[in-house]
Amino acid sequence: MCGIVGYIGKNPAAPIILDGLAKLEYRGYDSAGMAVFDGEKINTRKAIGRLKILENLTRGGETMPGTAGIGHTRWASHGAPSDKNAHPHTNTAGTIAVVHNGIIENYMPLKKKLAEKGYQFVSETDTEVLAHLLDYYYKGNPLEAITKVLQRVEGAYALGIMFADNPEEVYAARKDSPLIVGQNESGSFIASDVPAILKYTRKVYYMDNQEVAVLRADGLRFYSLDEEEVEKAPVTIDWDSNAAEKAGYEHFMLKEMYEQPKTIMDTISPRLQGGDIVIDELKMSDEELRAVKKIHIAACGSAYHAGVTGKYVLEGLARIPVEVDLASEFRYRNPILGEGSMVIVISQSGETADTMAALRESKAKGYQVLGIVNVVGSSIAREADACLYTWAGPEIAVATTKAYSAQLAALYLLAMKFAKVRGIMPDEEFKGLLADLKRLPDQIELLLAQKQKIQHFANRYLGARDIFFIGRGIDYAISLEGSLKLKEISYLHSEAYAAGELKHGTISLIEDGTLVVAVSTQPDLYKKTISNIEEVKARGAFVMAVTNEENQAMEKVSDYVMYLPETNPYFANSLAIIPLQLFAYYVAVGRGCDVDKPRNLAKSVTIE
Image 1 (cartoon, rainbow, N blue to C red):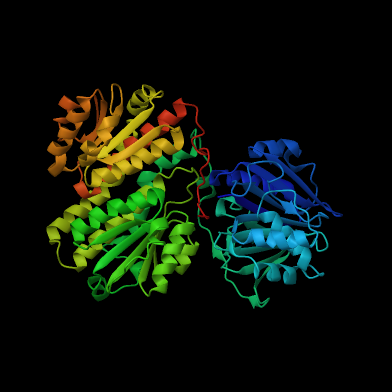
Image 2 (spheres, helix red, strand yellow):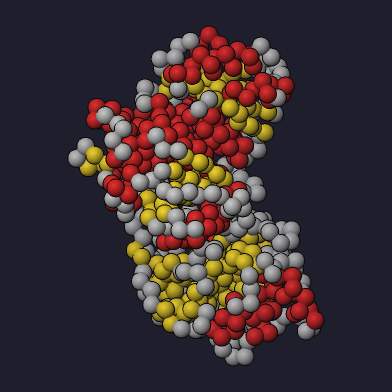
């Protein structure tokens, strides 16, 4: 959520900041602003709405000269979207400017104390409190003022800070909200995420919690809150810079859907060696894997849906009991983690706040935590005991597609590894699963090639009001993700239900013309799902079915059928989700929605 970009160096700062913020639009925002030091004072410009408004207001940065600045795209949390609530925020004199991601939880008592000392506030934000608190503590030493402020605030923050009295430095600080620092021959950068500065440098430093960075045109330094210098090693980003561009596609989401075959191949290939699965990142011996008695999965959104699939696959193949929790529930229900428990946390960004909290609670209780993440060097990657990267590359669209598919592939590998080590999977079955796993990328290519057929069907349902997804077992997990894709980018009301629950209330909502998407990929459950389809058809529903090529009986009870290539039932999600992603995409496009940046949503949810 929100985006931060900062620069100090030899070149004009404003165009660099605007360019970087444009690369972070996927994170979700409702206003934008910049602060640039012009040689005499800090100038600020803010605008509610899209970044283009700020670009026009500043003529692409031309009206804000200077080689040091900070910028921000805001997603409203304290105070409605408005120019006055937009960042940067300054002290009364305008000599200190701050941009902030996160939430300062104790801002109200701090604000009250500052008001008692005569400070006046013009916004409703928690961030303005930081600007005035910095003013209160500033006695000529910016680093000292920053560390004193950070020792008083509670909550999460990623900060970019400027002092007019010290124009040769820009400051950054971080706690529980992602922030990176980069450098090239022209200057130094801060950013919320890699795409913002990938054009300028591939050498970045991932800031740790409660660290402060001092950026100069010719170098970087890092400090603890005790003002002790910290040594840090840079990480080289090996993403292709073109991966963060649309490459001719109308939307990032469509491009990323078409990248799914490569994403899955990149995730599984390094772990397939000599007819076996080798996952060195687990850092666990076969004996330690066999000692695992139970697995807990915690995640949010689509990653949670991947975890639900993971439960069926791990329990089915490896016969290990699995509990799946929304990370926001896991952290507050005081979970019981017994002896031999292992915790898996899943997050594309590696910075999801609730998932981070689940990780930390599990580690505090002494349990092994495996992170499945996409972003190298992210907080979860650093704090987990082991990290299984999904190698999906940068995912820009808010609605995940390729990262979700990569998470599924990682979970398949884990399930097969556990099954093999535990000695419950015959060699022939293991070989068959490996062959099916390797075929998935080509099979997804075949499904993507049918996009026009799905687009034609989607155009018929642009005016739908309510859409229901139903399935059993793994098909229920698929339905959860298919429904989420549709609702988050098209704004249509959509719900997913376990098909066996229809008669327990949901079927009362089915009426003439209601679209029901029935997922049926599990051969043992074909007949059960067909019975559920007949129930909704009897009440006037129009049924779109997603099923396997062998299940021809679906033709008789459904109005439209999307067939999938043959694969092992445990891998069916990887194929079934493709037509559902395409369906959601074309419905959203047909309705004129902003597919890559749906309203009210953010790519990386770094606050509760």
